[in-house]
Image (cartoon, rainbow, N blue to C red):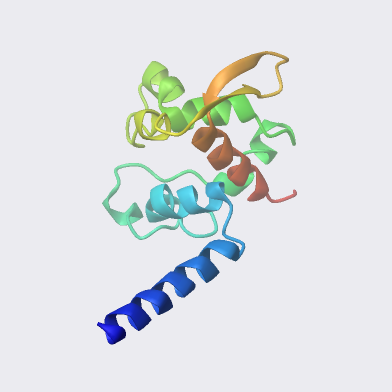
Length: 136
């Protein structure tokens, strides 16, 4: 019984220590979970699953460069959640909208001056992608 109590105490202390240390931002964790397989660690489209795909994978580090130096937050979020892709027939990338909607919804202005209820996980992932942008 004493050994069980000590091991329980040790496990509890380890958990408490893990909870007090800074963690990766939510967007980076979501990227690692949902995107790395195709887009790779750096976002350049060199993930381990690319050989099995029928089309080249987008280089996520050049989104701003392809848009005149501006990161199109609303368009990126729409692509991630599947809305834009469904409209344009690009169905190779999975639709992450339903998965990300499980996170709390917050009012978010993506730059158009309109606050829209948006899943916080979708915002976090899009904001993380903005950090991957390379300068021309």
